[in-house]
Length: 250
Image (tube, rainbow, N blue to C red; front, side, top):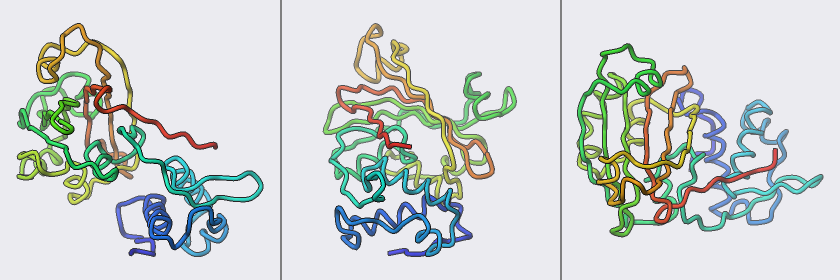
């Protein structure tokens, strides 16, 4: 179990510390309801700033691995079982479901090719007009029931990595794991959720009518150098996969 901060890793320090503390909670090193080390103690142990430690503790709270008690501190806890996709999580749908112990996830790759992107994609990824990006279209099912249709767009350098990722193209591999292995680690993301009628092609993939409202999630991810490396649009049937948002007191 990793217990130190890797200074050369592209993974943000707060994410590394989150993993360490989460593992300590889930392994029982910090039993449920035991007070966690203070901010000052964590800063001293890991050589991190107080702002980084606070960001970590907030993430632990939001994901249910800690609870804050006024004037007493932060205590270890085990999160309730989730049934949906936590949309503010840096992980994607697949990793979210696997972490919840779900195994009946199937992915069908509909298309994977370099294309000229729609205007909103080119603007999001900050690519020049006419420059092709790699588009990956997939249908995801849970326990045999169609749950979502997704399109990821990647700029050229990232797209070349995806085009060579056989497991991703076969629907068995993780996009996030492939990105991580290629050195693209999410430092931040912005997601916009809107209920609207699905375009005809999307409705066909989802098996719904073109007049049926579907939740559309658009997400843009960037790394610590503010390089925009992944932009996706996911249409979610929330009666199959509910979207969840964890809230922690600031």
